[in-house]
Image (cartoon, one colour):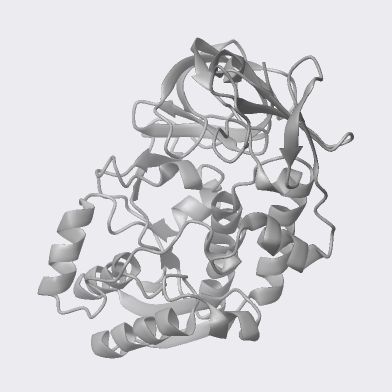
Length: 367
């Protein structure tokens, strides 16, 4: 459904990563008559950006690709340094969460604070009314309340609505997702037809800023905190082996434990105070209940009585039926109809009504 937005002009800033999706988004909007400005954010310090792998979204190679596409489209193009913001809002958060024994989701935080936060600020400073990205998601509007809705993209395998659950009404009002109604394979064909040089570009990796390093090595280099070895124990505290350091592990992990056991063992807990990894069987990692905090709602103002939803506990997790109950403030309890594998503190749980994102929050604990 087309949404009428009453803005003074059709000037729009498109976040361009040097990949096929953002390039195509810019090309589609230009073809539709928008006054398009391309923008790439340099999110890492200059020395790291220069050494970044080609798949990363702010490597010199990706910036060069984005610049070339902008030139071919005949649109203005800017590279904006947001390395300090990115360090404070995303990298520090990423490192601190792992050091706390939680598993962060930097893509969600980056979307909220950088890609749709800082980009909207930059767009406004350039006199633009709108921003756009190459995300596979859609925006609608609720006829009765007038609220902007975040919906899944048409391509269910590429849908990125999970990563966008924390966007505000104002951010959605000023955002376009030109690729929300097409499939990824269609996007590549269309990009090739439009002669975009990025039509066959490899998709960027999820955690773009570690530069191919393991997370624990990256955290150690970034923070200077010593990653200490410790014991792997079972639920009774019996020592079964040793671990390389808590940041190397996450809830639900099975590989890399180095333990021979009659049944496969999974990480079921991270004991920061005692520097221990707690393991158990598959049954121990299955949880039916979780508590989420810092919950944000998009489609509704909040919940009073218990509400039935479909919930995702990670991006590649299949939506599961659940009941959400208010825990007071911005906290909720989520009770699943069937136990779910490894709800992980630090990850996002996102609530859906069919293809509409109701909202979401951050998993604090599961039981």
